[in-house]
Image 1: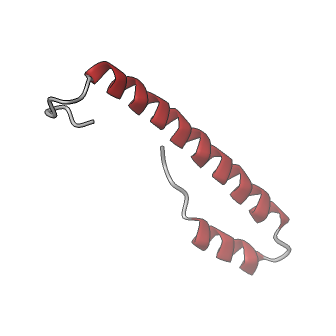
Image 2: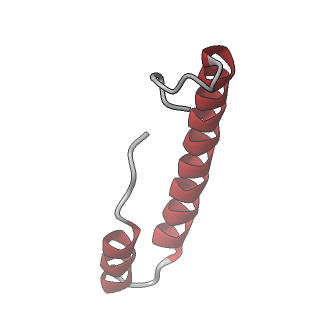
Length: 60
């Protein structure tokens, strides 16, 4: 997996890292949509504030 590791093939590592990045991006987007739904359905501003604090959005 590391570039200087002689026991790995670079082509498959590159493909795997791209797949991992896409998977991570989809997971983050899914979590963000769930956070948005929870935030929109929160009945009070204090609950929205609490959701926003607990969610702490992740970037890609």
